[in-house]
Image (tube, rainbow, N blue to C red; front, side, top):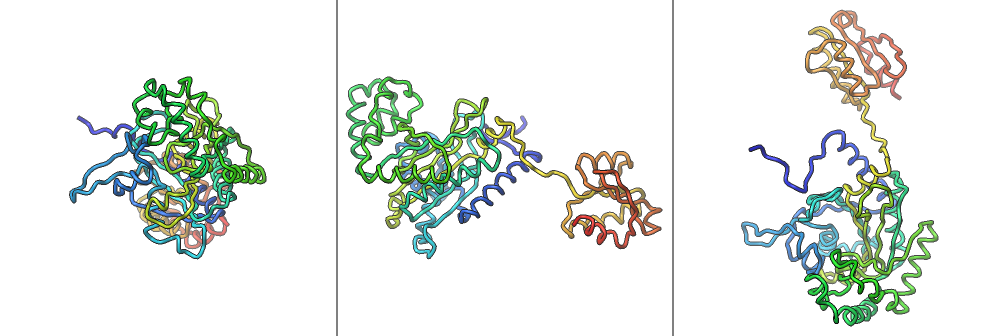
Length: 423
């Protein structure tokens, strides 16, 4: 029996990896403009981190985590998301004491969730995320949203929709929580077992239920907007004002609650309205999580962030027929005819590569016609042809594949001439 790839994973092959690299580089470039620095955390952490950081009432913790006991008897989990690990590192390394505040971080790497695989959704997926820790200024909320929108727009997406909501502070959340319990309690038996267990623990999570989303009580549930105190209203008003100031359109959705327990105040999602993208339209989600650092035994530190799957981003690009400007052309292909010429091109190839050029030669002892076809497949900008006779005469033929122009260059000055030609 042949060994196949595990369900819910994928091989990313040459031809596709270049697209990933382009997206990753673009995200890093934009983060640099906003002064966010990269952090790299372990792929696995102690399970307790996610129980405390993500929340034991979430689907991630209850149903989706890859957890195991290691040989030392420790409970370990493959990370299902990046915020908890980033905050753990922030606390452990006392980054709250750094002179530059807020601390602005981004991460990129594989995450693991045991979900039902579907288009653009895998059990191992690559997540890009941003966290800003240390500021209560609503302007940082607008900045984080702006950063996410910039990545999508600069990659070429146009059919985007930003949806925002306020989950309020602790006082507002408590008032809304009590109202939700009163609303759902009389008929909670009509809801799924997950919603029944959430009623007392975290009733806001009922609003995020995929099973009972069409239940009539969902449409009449108390809105968090109606329970915001003056401070929370003012905060949300400022976030909306700043988004308007920087030219970002948005819609307010009172039912947007997000799926993790640590959110408060600003919550947002960026969605794709592209035709054919799929039933699940969310590309990116995030929000403010004041209180999470304290949950990780750190000092009182506000925070806000977002995360998105690169797989989902690629699906959105495909739905909008966006072709990434991935340059797969090489600078030069060496065609050799004769044993002495072949031997010489080994050293010449190395010199070209050492000088910074992307270069290739034939390794299959093919005829000249087949070597030129190979150069075409590599989209070579130039082809240099060297035979045993030319080698003896200290010359090499250089052909431009763009205009067909051809010239003979002294072999001992070829590298210098090619460098000049390429400048």
